[in-house]
Amino acid sequence: MKETDFIGRIDCDFPYDHPLKWRRLSAAAPRISPNAAFMVLHEVCRVPRSVQMDRPRAERIIGHLLRRFRHPAVKVIAPAIRSYISENTLRPRAAASLMRKLSIYDGEYNALAICYLSAYDSSGMLDRTYEQIVGRWRAASGEASEA
Image (cartoon, rainbow, N blue to C red; front, side, top):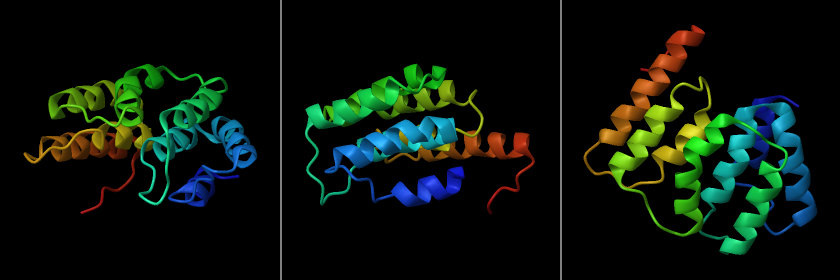
């Protein structure tokens, strides 16, 4: 399965209430790409309002994934993940710091989104940081940036 197909399949439609399904998806994601695995983390961190996700269930899903997925960026985004499952937000400067540390991992858009969305920032600092990082990744890959 292609990364884009996998991400499209679970985006806002993760099977939180079906352990067999989320276990299969969590096991498959790292074999597709790191960005696909980070999408699983993104879905667990940013559950829809219609889903009741308690901390133990979130930790089970994350733990299941992380037993199969080893990537240095996981350590970078760990504070953002912890903030989500404890239902707290990070300070904007802390989130921006995580984003800058993550920027060395080209193309890990879902990991970047976890950090970007982990703080409330009315100043626009996180928006600017996000756009700078994504712009560098796109330039490095030869991808045209969106205007």
